[in-house]
Image (cartoon, rainbow, N blue to C red):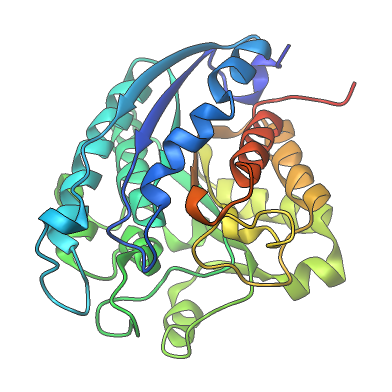
Length: 310
């Protein structure tokens, strides 16, 4: 059975966000279904938690949507989904539940984090963010080489980028850049690098993990993300893991986290007792083999929620 100290909650609120408008390749809209098919709910209940599955937020399909401007494609539709997701997350957090969001592409993080921040703000509290990803996701429409919004959500959360994303609830930034930590980074666009350098976020690349080890990186990351904050949100992009272990992602990059490194990261987060919410994104069943990536995603959620070997 999971330890209550992990989250401070006994009920996990599962919210699907089947959005693939922000990605360059189709298929991540099926990610929430893939994770549920991998028996996510039953595994969480086996840890001793109650599960309240709130279903999916609405998300437009590209076939019926106007992409709009080429430097931030489908921005209006993505913002609408993020606003709905934020409201669902806020309500769950207000009711004392632990929000677990299933993506969808990584642009859904704007909604998840905005909702958590709004809930905490009512109590005078703030949130730290640990962003585990092969990419830094800090482009803006002015720098993005693709116009894909899933490369922009972290910039939006620290107040940079289109107002439709930065100003959900009417204020920005949602998180202080000093409480944002990126882990497993290994693919940053040339035009994005200067944004990352100037932003004030902390970045641990795969080289840092190779040289220092996951234990040292995670302990330091937790200290930075939680400094002055009441808790941590973890945003887990499955492309942070090496494609040999997680092939079902839209933007795979060789040289990612190993199976054990990914689990260790989740276990250390759980041990901290600071985890307040989580999302898992970019699972693409079309590119997967026998739902392997979703099954790994479920395993990692279990480690974050307190599953132990003994």
